Amino acid sequence: MLCNNWKPTAMKVACVCAMSLSIALGSHATSQADYLTVFGGPTYNSTSQTGYLDPRLNYHSGAGVSSTAAVGTVRKYVNNVSLGQRPYLWDTTGAAPIELGVISTATNGVANTHAVAINDTGTVAGFGVHFSGNDFIQTSALRWDAGTTVPTLLGGLGLNTYGLPSGSVRSMNSSGTIAGLSEMYIGGHEIGTRAVRWDPSGTEAIELGNIGTHSSGYTRAQAEAINDAGTIVGSSEKYINNLGSGWRPVRWDAGSTVAVELGVLGPSDGNSHGRATFINQTGIIVGEVYNGSGRQRAVRWDAGSTVAIELGLLSIFPPSSATSTPYGINASGTIVGSASASNMGGRAIRWDAGSTVAVELPALGGQSSQAQDINDAGLIVGRAQITQNLQWHAMLWDAAGVGTDLNTLIDPASGWTLTEAQSIGSTGLISGIGMFDPDLGGPLPSYERMYLLDVSTIPEPSTICLFGLGLLGMTGVAVRKRKLGAD
Image (cartoon, rainbow, N blue to C red; front, side, top):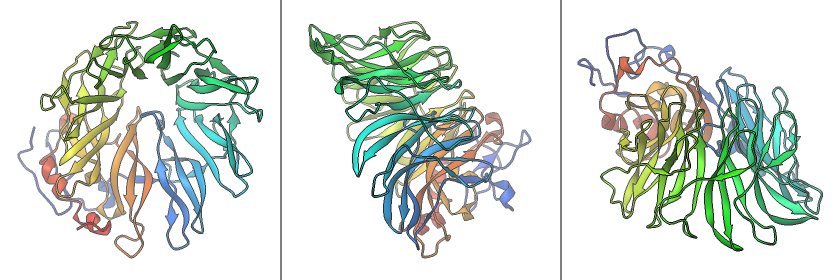
């Protein structure tokens, strides 16, 4: 739907349907109050070469943002000397971002600790590296309880020769139950990895079952996601007659450690690799498997079922070379992700609840786009390339599929170019990564920085319509584009 009256400006091209009370998302603004506030993560000072660069957000879309805050990982520098990866938490209060404590520091001051997930109670989960001198000796799972920056070491399945547990976090639910993996040690000897969970009341790793082991006891499995009911999904290596037969998607029902093997596409042989990556609150699972032609395809397993349902591709992609990947699912069962094919850019995709039909989400005229996450209100976030220089811009798509370049919602004089929106929480809080210009076109270089953007104040989708997504890709970024050194 297009508005009858629209007004392009040098900064934005957008329109608002005059049928309801709303703010003008893309119209000419007369004050900063007309824009959404960007809440930035930790900063970097290029003059002193001190601060934080190379931001990384959560490893699992949706896990790293709550209704009020987000977590991520950045590389710390002091006088141009890298001190390794540090976990950070920041929120929308305007308070300074908080550096969370690390589990171990090398003799040279380097640490390598990551924050992966946060829930609405303020509990944070992640993992960190132990050092002996300057040498890496083990990665362990961690939890930061609400209100503290001191990490709690979570147990593993046995101890290595240094007496340390192994562990890595993938996801956490609202009650604080954590899902991930741990190497298994017997007498200090490692015999593969196992999927595990950590309950909120303790630190003990609870081993989740697998779907076969070698006679030596060796096998591999890992948990990827957990819903609020406690059902966990992931993958496990399958062994038949002592031979590895590929990774298979699995489910561990709430309160159980028994691995339920999920179906794949094509023959169930050594080429039948796959994994389950997301599960919603009703038990619908999505993941990726390889079909009989060896192409990765997005699939869905309905609640309680083990039958893989292949999600469709766009007609522009030849099936022989196309691949698809899911990145999120909401409570109603709507799935988002991307699809691509040889010599063709990827496309942001939505599969509606109960459907296998791929719906392409409108982008900004460039070659590629990607949908990264979806919340229960149907809001989708991701990124898309703009027309003229294929620069990435962060995107928001509403439940009707209407797309908005997030840069049209923020003050052009803020110094920000939002390049990626990775996660969106239940209340509309988006976490992502952008380029930040600290002196608005001055001599100081721009750098990548994490951000939060609260889109809960955006009007209902039926009241907003966006004019000329292609034009948005060509306008409203000229000033910022020059600041970043583009032509």
